[in-house]
Image 1 (cartoon, rainbow, N blue to C red):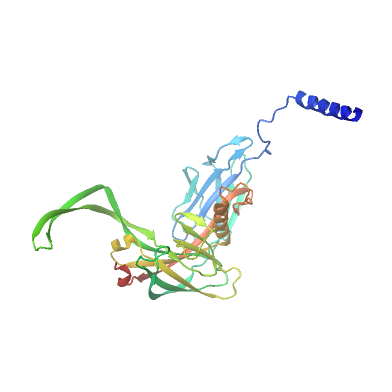
Image 2 (tube, rainbow, N blue to C red):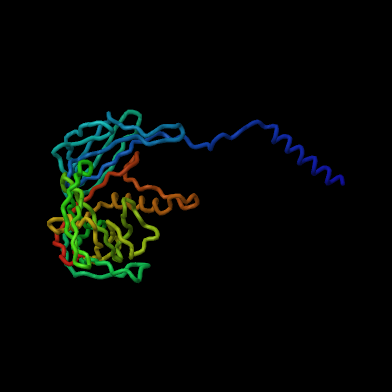
Length: 350
């Protein structure tokens, strides 16, 4: 009994001491973080040089993302300084009439009061040389619908000639679709004569809307491929890496030949129909191969990985890739090449 009593007394004494402490934990104790410069720019040979500079968001102390409009931005082309970029607000800096050149290395340095100097480098990749072959039409059964008529798919083969530096690229197919003015649409009605089974006729009005065309925009076509070099895809604006079934369609496939020894690559793809193809007056599609520098590809790949574990609190943390020294963000580059092909008329028929 004495041993039990002594043990109980110790427990009660410890409880009294613990309960007597009036220290409350109101929040997690984060390490203090200093804000850093965030540099975002994707160089493209068809666009002027445009860079966005902001400051990073921190939780301790609380600090929101802010635009940095008074930074000193220095950009070098193969170590030769370019004209000073002009600040146009909202953190954007541009160099007018200056287009990046494939094969050239670009460096950026950003200095701003209260921040470390941020630096990054990218080499604009060379365009990919490729050809396109039309392999005809493939009729595919509709998944989970055995009684449905098969879907038409246009089958194409892309033959890519890759140099030693082309290891990261994306493939897409697009067509020119008219931009319609839905707000100012008008109704047009015509008289239609229809005949009953007994031979009698009746007349009725058939009405439909007419839209003004504001211009032409490029719209992506969905396709699927089981090419071994595909690392992730993009569909409906999202990067997809998990649960990707090769029977699913995407509007862009991102590929890597980092561990491939061959300098040529054959890419087979089946293109699905698009209801807006009927509006494509010239019946042409454009095959596009974007060549990426390594930094930009790894940045997009990390976004796909983050999307794969989004919402899972127990998943391994994904660190978004950044090539900015003393800062955050991406200073990357891409170079497109394209081939235009006429669509098979049978593919457009219902």
